[in-house]
Length: 308
Image 1 (cartoon, rainbow, N blue to C red):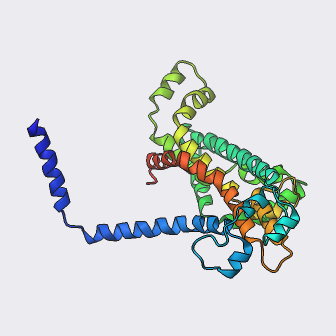
Image 2 (image 1 turned 90 degrees about the vertical axis):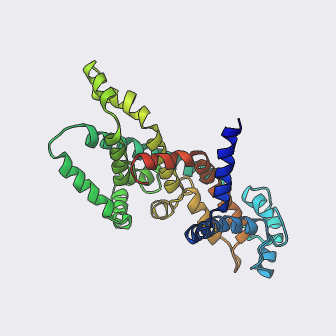
Image 3 (image 1 turned 45 degrees about the vertical axis):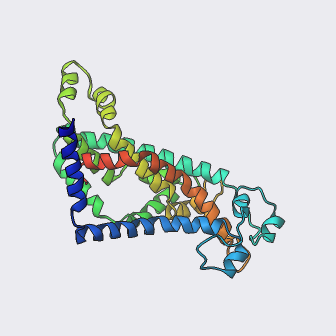
């Protein structure tokens, strides 16, 4: 028993005596700064939401909540009257989160599903099927990664307007639903790294390509598909500029637009910062939960696809 314990203790002693390398210290300092820079904006939002607007004007640089109050959260949840909101320093403007959250879920959910599904079909065709001009088409598609997204906004806007789809979910979703160069490239790289023997065995047994794709390839690709779904959902959830161009109707406005309208509807010289930060926290909470649940899977999928 002693022969097993002794090397372990000696290893611990050797590690404890190792001098701290300057590079490791710099790395830890850099990591601490990155973590602080990432977490501090969230803390500042929470600190502002838990303060009163009058207290924020009196002590704008305080690191802790000023004149602690739950009033901002009560305002965005519709639990305060207009007079109570004005008494606590609010603008008197109201925001109902239920409808914008529903719209954001429809917009982000349907757009993400369509984008990942069609990208999976295209990636499978580029990775597994043999057809004339495949590599040339893929190179042309690959160049789409170099095109800034802002250049496609105006043509898409004109197309949606000519089709009469303004102020509709179809107008919000269709431009990005069928094509994503990054998703196709990401999944193609994963499919190329997969062992194709199971698929070949299924084809020899008489299974069709579609059956192989849906019954074998898709289940084996659950990791990267989940990764793209999470990243796509976060992107659509936070999207602001495209919904601003397409919709001005409350029945289709996502949460990002509703927050902007809430800020601009303030009749006071100063916006209701406490209420705005409380609403922004509610908007960010679903994305934080999604990333906390699927964060490890996202990192693993990036490693499988050779991006790490």
